[in-house]
Length: 88
Image 1 (cartoon, rainbow, N blue to C red):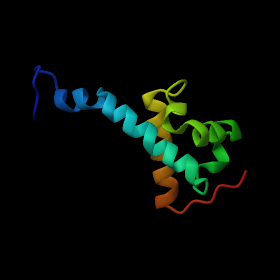
Image 2 (tube, rainbow, N blue to C red):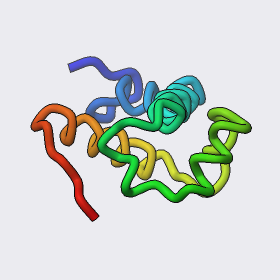
Image 3 (cartoon, rainbow, N blue to C red):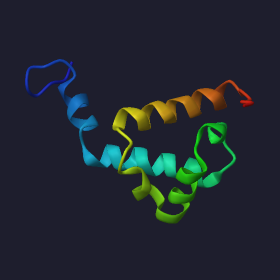
Image 4 (cartoon, rainbow, N blue to C red):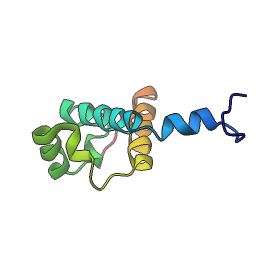
């Protein structure tokens, strides 16, 4: 197990706290929103879609925690993997 401060998973924890990781999450979600044809679309507000198309990943900096970004991307991956159709 790799660590630099004596804690379990300390290298992983440090990497997850990096701004580059948070930026990558925002960019990936912005790409999905801009595409406009993914399984997440029924769950996203039209206002969010418009903001992301206008501002890009910067639109996701306010109001979305890292946990929310991760969960949203994981949900998208699960819906795609299992070819789930969402009907609201």
